[in-house]
Length: 611
Image 1: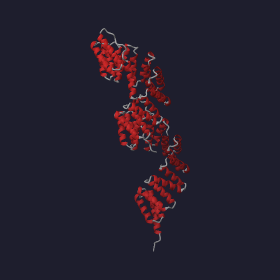
Image 2: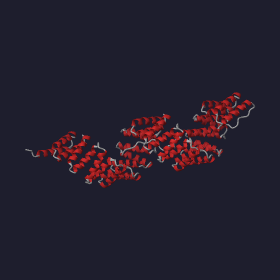
Image 3: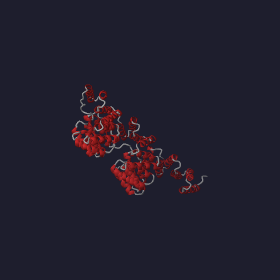
Image 4: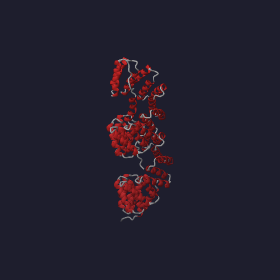
């Protein structure tokens, strides 16, 4: 059977790499905004108090550049104000100037080395810079100075989370939540850590509590939807996504989430509609382009899929996921050279991604580089032991290399992980090559039960039935294939051979003729019809078919032998002799050809001479 290339993306949520940018940004900003200290200290200097009051007003309006100007003025009046350095630093951080933020927070630490607040603020700035080890160090120092400082613990938890140390993050969030049970945001952060641990039940509990505390929070609804998605409860996931969209129709992440739910259920039109809306709202979000490309791919609209991957790569030329996805799509349009370039680039960027290796292995297998393909599939399995594609394709590659014995255990594992009709057919073929006909047929029948429209299963079983002389069974299977695909010339010929074996030569001739109409350049089809016409004593028709078969494949011995026989029967002895001579010249050790020629020479010798 023909193997299909692998589309790269599996279910799109469950990988940190496809957390959308809007989600990630929201995860960080909530911490920043909550940090601004409440009231400015009252001092005796009226100008200083006025500057601090105006700065506070600008902060409340999120006018951070204007607030910085007032803090500049305040610091010029009081260069030892820890409060001013802390809050000017936070304004710098919010505007993305982390270097200046760090300078301010470090100065605050110099001014007040025993105060936990400067360490807490600098920890948050390091978190914004994604310097997680430094975040943890400053948070830990702040907690040494103030063991009850829940914000320091929250930032340390966030840093552990970003380092994928989810258990440590959860320990910190547990303490925060015990001290602040009505604070919704910490519930969300702990839920995120549970989510990435794939402990979806606990994540759902925390998101649910966060929603209770803050019913209008769409973020928690989106991520609770993602958690339902992780549990494959798509009805509840879609319900949460629907509510998030109702509450905030401009939140791109809610549309993405619902699109993912449609995608994994193969409702690709709805998935594409949701991804399109997400793209309209957030056109710079890489994940939406990749996911929509995947959906186009599964609809066999490969040009549209490739266009979406192109746009993703325009946004991020080093996206290994976009490269791998485009590489897989290019395979479907027979651009294996371009596909190989994309897949090799994806592997260089992310050597730990298993499915890039599966796709590259597929290309190598198609090019008969079995050793290279086997190496790719084995590495994919090492990286992702439970990937059925890795095992399935490794089985196919070993099978193609002639090692069915080694292939079967990989088919077994692939079928354990994902029972699939095509895999049963492949394993059945492996059993057949080992002459284990009963197991082969059992696998073909399992494939048919799983997929009653699987033409490969019917064709394979038809071949076995024909070989066992179960002609009616073979005809039934081939007829089912033809019903599913009336243009399947191979199935039509196979049925013709069964009719021929049943001595129903007219039906055999009709099937062979239809196969020739569908595929006129197939020499064997012409030969088959020539054989049926030969059997009907239509010698002219037979010779015409044999002649066309020989024109298409001049060195095929059977074709020459049968035309020689038909010419001999028609008493075209010179023509028959020419065919035998050609056959013997091509195949000097062909005993049947020499016997046929000897018989012909006897016939020529005994032929009466015209006077």
